[in-house]
Length: 257
Image (cartoon, rainbow, N blue to C red; front, top):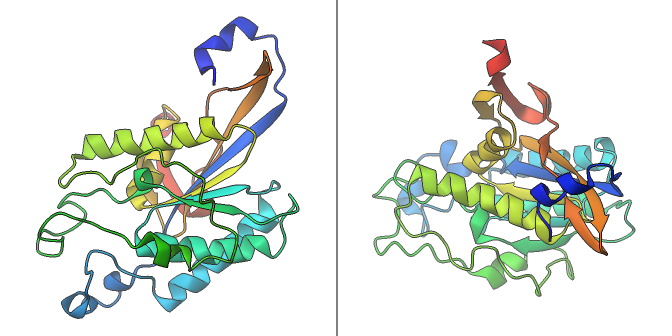
């Protein structure tokens, strides 16, 4: 697709539609509530949700369906279990009523995974060989029949190597968000990721954010105009729509300092 700087020549054009991209943090993870879970877990780096976390995810999905004013067409999710369980609850909530007249399409995306370094995962918990493998077929079974898009090609074909830097992770999150938006310019997207990924969505697409915090199931809404040129869809700049304190997201703007 043509990029943003090519739109300048056609600044007089009116957008044919607006694309919305929602970037969400997963729900409440079990190991933060029950620290002893790690001692007996087969995959101590891959915590599931708590039961209240499942409920929160479902209710968040209901809120998205009722309050955003537009349908979600596609959902992309980090392969970590807490994200997959969050996404599964949201898909069920969204699929009960979908303004687009169909179910949400689900795809797994390595680019949305957790930062793979000891800042986020303690060395004694991480797999000794650095291999954060996931049984995708088992994860797919958590979603309603027919909802997983098996034709999707991941932006990041492989998981990041242990140990990626904070800068590398930020670039990865930003590239993933941008690439997914460009790949499906006529569809609204929901990305279920980790706290860092949601914070990147908050800080990368506006110049004003200097400090931020995202609660469980907190989400950032990005929006951009879509134009048509030579029968191609052209995406404008993604802009932050989330206000301070909205949707479980708090931040400080440089304008407030």
